[in-house]
Length: 77
Image (cartoon, rainbow, N blue to C red; front, side):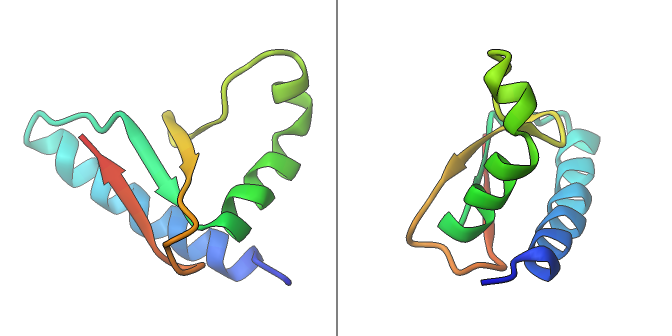
């Protein structure tokens, strides 16, 4: 399954939402994404993870949420 388009969509939308939240003084602690997008992030960040770095996207920790559709995400405060 190719998730490249979904990743771009998730990143674009999450970036806009993160900026909007930061504008009102909120800083999300977690970005939840679908399993396919999560696996893609793991693949893209393999080297950093192997070095012991946490999985961060847009400066926010990422968690897998199998209940989300591939193009969906949740930002948790």
